[in-house]
Amino acid sequence: MKLQISGTGIAVTPELRRRIRRRVDFALGRFGGGIKTLSVRLKGEAGPRGGLDHQCEIRVKTAFTEPIVVRDLQEDVESATALAVDKVQRALERQLPMKERSHHERVQTSRL
Image 1 (cartoon, rainbow, N blue to C red):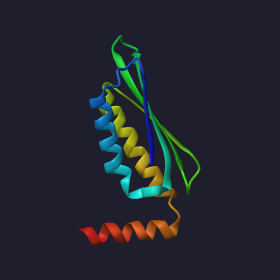
Image 2 (image 1 turned 90 degrees about the vertical axis):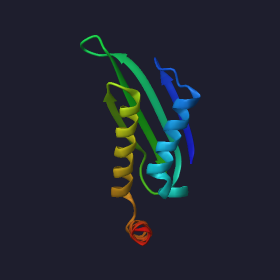
Image 3 (image 1 turned 120 degrees about the vertical axis):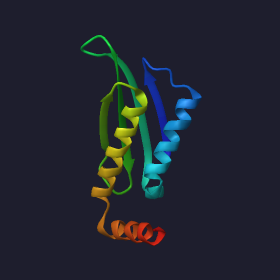
Image 4 (image 1 turned 180 degrees about the vertical axis):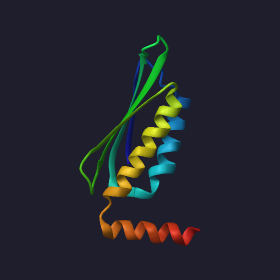
């Protein structure tokens, strides 16, 4: 999986990149080679009450679904990223072809 991380109004430090990669690998690693590219775009913007809101937009291109785009807006970048990754995971699970879905379910069940 090719992972791209960029930010506007947010410093994308090596530590932040490492944490995002770890979260993505943990949540989406089971989809293996099915994910061609995953793009994470972080954006800091002024909130309606003067605070800073953080948006995470994730775009996923896969071998088995149409491109998926999800966004989440939270008070901090970690929460926005975590919730956006969760949304991507659920979207991929819903769109997996039946054959792939049954394989993934067998693998997960056998690990319990």
